[in-house]
Length: 400
Image (cartoon, rainbow, N blue to C red):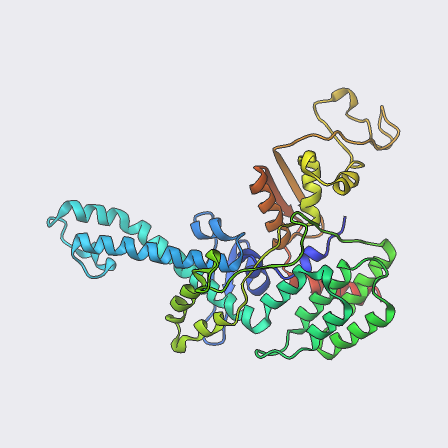
């Protein structure tokens, strides 16, 4: 199974945006900007905020940062009130002989409070960098378009590519990714040769290298590769959240988050930045890998299409020693592949040969959490969308 759409598409979750916009490797995130020096952050297992919010949509993450900051301020205010100091950083310098009980409690809580503040500062800085990318690259618009990619036509895609934006045109790579997602999501032979020429012309005008488009097109023509997604809700239209302050429980903290971030920079730049970012919720759909995993682990909930695709998978049961070779070509006790039993499994491991991505991982993780399954996900490499496009370009250049 080859699902390129999941790796190329523009994500809207926290971890997908970090992978797309920033440099992340081995859980170390590098943030660079014109006005500030390079900053490195480690998102390890002790990072409570990353563990809770990595798979959440970005507007929800903004709300959580705002909530955690309020909680921190309340806890810090309680400690300073009980000890009589004006700043929580002055507690360690106080005389323990005075009001010893309160001071002992405060000093005990101080390391946890300091660590929590450092974690929140980390994610404030990461979120600030992501917001700049979202606004300048129009990632909210691209995500919204790709969520409803089944409703797009060549004409609407060309219109999106050509339309002027107040913050500048989409980058060449983002335009290329949108076209690739559209092409791979379209039925076979639905896009004519003339349409492809028009799309390539627009991409070249934007400065994109179309070698990757040529490679994907040739690969699909050879293998008749199809990429499909199964929508649980029956709709591919993105759910728009109401703007904070005008209703919409999920996004009520987005504006407040902007105010807090704006206070950290001169001129309220981030407050203006957030005001132009659209709020979307990802549609409740299963990507191909998640769909097939569901068919293998929980066949009672899977679609008929998924069951048909997985019924021919080789089924190896280590408990059935008499038939351990049955179903394998040339194996004793069997002359070929046999259908596996439809069973329910609580734990599974998904390994992507050729590379894994955060959009795919987040979709699989969301399904596992919803169904109570335990799934480990990995691959030969963790690919960011831009890096994957470069790989496709190299393949396209060497197979001309």
